[in-house]
Image (cartoon, rainbow, N blue to C red; front, side, top):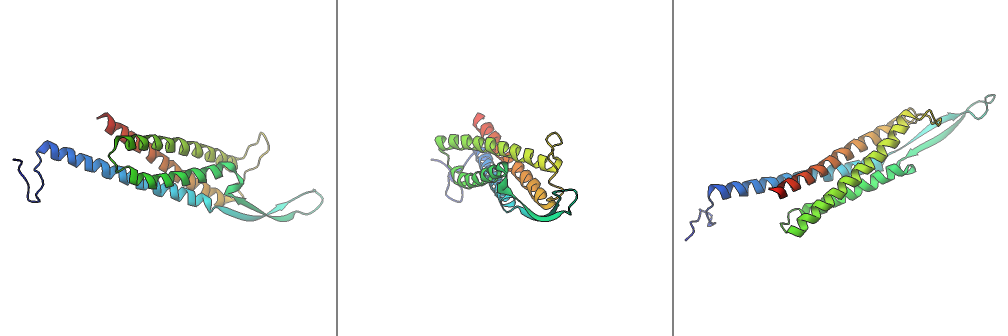
Length: 189
């Protein structure tokens, strides 16, 4: 007959106890990384999604006339790369919330689906980060070859929020990449 501990559960030898402890630690780490990925991608979507700034800019139409002051707005949805970034981060944070439930399942098919979806989130987030970063750099540096002026000199707060959103999204995508690496490492053992 199997020996039992004080709680009435079957007693485990040292190897079983160590394996159960490692499994619990890996599961806890996985859930913690998923929560962090959820928070970072949600924060990135919110920071960029509420980003707008209006400035009054003097525009000179003719050299002989005085400049006309015109209010000009910068909003995230004016640029498709920023729209893609907000949508990607919203999708990734929604998936992270769903994956918190799915990740606790021990079923083989569910685990494989979570790995594949994690990989899709990595690809989607890195592509949206690249697009947003390219447009952000264009706004920061301008492009002298096509005579595009720097925009961030006028819309500084807007550009700063874009930079924060990209940084948060990049951290979130690195966490999704870490999740894939952890799952693949766990699967190979």
